[in-house]
Length: 169
View 1 (cartoon, rainbow, N blue to C red):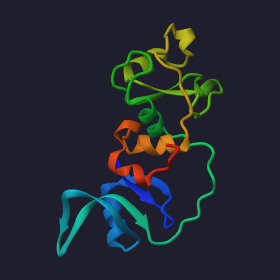
View 2 (view 1 turned 45 degrees about the vertical axis):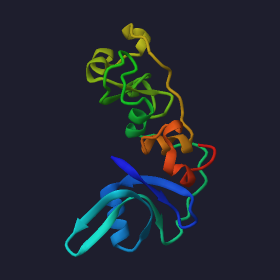
View 3 (view 1 turned 180 degrees about the vertical axis):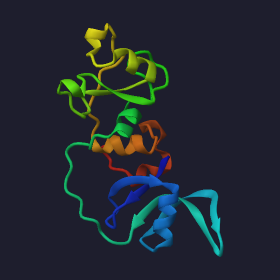
């Protein structure tokens, strides 16, 4: 699970990483802990570190401006809250509305989360050809929304991390 927010040296949010990766970055002196869980500690041989919730890189990383969130299979599952777009059960796969074999692309608007059964039932057809209806239409999330989804946050749950995230999120 990616639950640690990574800030650039300029305090702008960059991405999220796993707890293990965050601890490695801190132990290698590539990042510092900006905000930690109040009662949790990671212990190792000769080291004790508060469990990081937000870390900041020591060196500035130049990132090109992004108007669009990059597509990923994990991103589609998170966007759709791991719910099948056809039946609403737990989704474990990503389904292409226009199959890749028919020219469909890996894009936010062409992919939905799906359970394995519905993905196999739909097979190499469009939902209309398979007689399947979508419970919700796919959409392209903003980069800020993608970051919040990766952290597992909804706007009402921001709480302590609100200060570290963009105001438009």
